[in-house]
Image 1 (tube, rainbow, N blue to C red):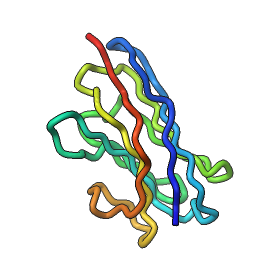
Image 2: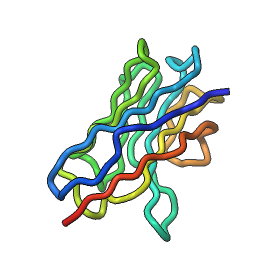
Image 3: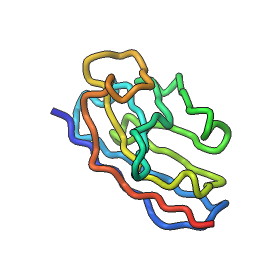
Image 4: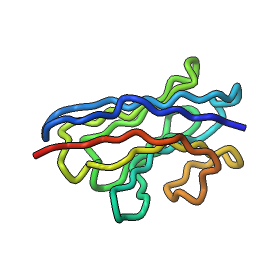
Length: 125
């Protein structure tokens, strides 16, 4: 079983930056592909970014490419999402997820077995 705890959300103005963190409990964290997803009110959960277990491969949704950066520190069992140039449309609950049954990075939520509780990001205009 893997427990994921997100932190770092908050209320910011458009153009500001935030860094989300996701701490994992698993000793095998370094072998899990990790992803960030978000869900706005009334919308489906959508892919934001993903990273391979070594950190060497990263993937981004087109809507965040060039503004968000995903990274991981396997020594700290933590994955990060650096969010720059935030826009009101980035407002959502952000979730981190771990893929425990495969070492292949995925961009769909159904591929991830473990989820955090989410952290709210609100961007005002």
